Length: 505
Image (cartoon, rainbow, N blue to C red; front, side, top):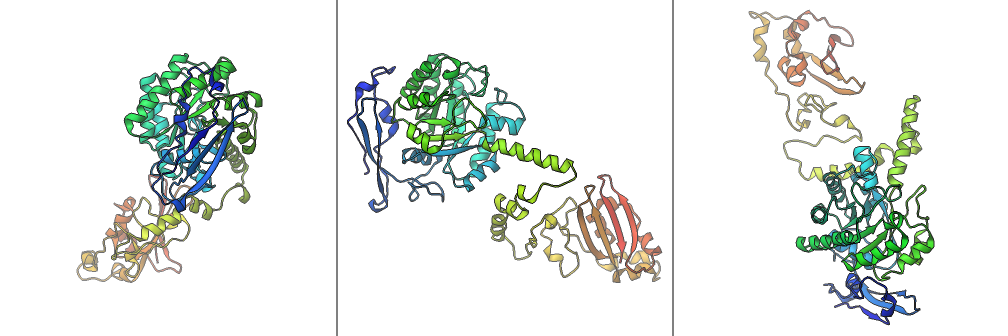
């Protein structure tokens, strides 16, 4: 067993707390059995100082892992859930920065960049999903649905923005249980009224002390009822809505109610931030570094660690630079240019980020012996289209097996003997030695289809291109004459706006 000990705690420091209970010790979870060999353990010692100058020393062993990723305190497959991974991160030394994502792609980029966890941002999700401000307009259902896509896209733990729980204490319970099922490792719950507002904008109001405490108690109950260990981050907006003193009182009370991490939003100075971190110093604190001009001063992670913070959120970086990059790209396109190569990843880099190469490798595991996988040339020209044929693949005998599904049915020449009349041999009987080229160009100018088939397979053509049903190609073939480079039989636009060309070669 790996144990932890608390020494020299000055309980007099906490005489002004809402409760004289030392419940904060339970949040530390410093005594825990980790089923692994002693040789894989790393012992670390951390300390925090009380106002009286005495030190609270903690000796504990940390071994945390999540998926294939490892941090400085990570070791072998101990964590079996996002919540466990997040708790191990909280118990590890140092400060931990986490950018805020707003969709599955931005979450994948956070993980690829090497971060150990990330947040979701109601500000960013409301902007990306609805194109609307973070003013209480987005619903619980929309937030949990977006969150589920985010957590499924990454293997690092994600702390979800639970806003104000979307109602009273009963709504909070439903929200917590929904976020647990969605795969979150943690959830942030705030004490704002409905409709809520972004923490650094005007018009914030908070619920009563009693209701704020009950929300956290309801969250703790929901966690127990779900058999989960999701990390509960209690946020108060009382600093801007009421006063700094009220915010400190609520932070203490929310910790006593069972919160694992404390967060006062929109603190206005370094002194306020330090005073906040001195409240229950053993309970982790979250700093919100609102980029671009929020009410809280911006500090480096090292400076925040010195103040006493454990987690750091960067809520606007990804959504902000995304908006700026899209605006620049749109300006370039509107001006008749494309974005400069240095402003965006190459197509190969995009495919790697999105997992195309991994997909292709895994796809090979399920290839059948009766068909071959279509070659991957690094572009979309080999993908299927609405005409059910692989573009660039000729449907002749040598390559017919490359079409993975819905192949064109090949009809034997005798089926068409009736078209030759009473044993007469005309141009049509010669068609078996010639080919029809069927070319389809989309209204956007991109090629959708370009295949060649024996000229006698008239029914085969209509299977490929339904728009040719009713066209008397036999008559066109009878009248066709050999021309160098081929004879164009048809050239028209179908109802979808695609250009369809049939050429006799």
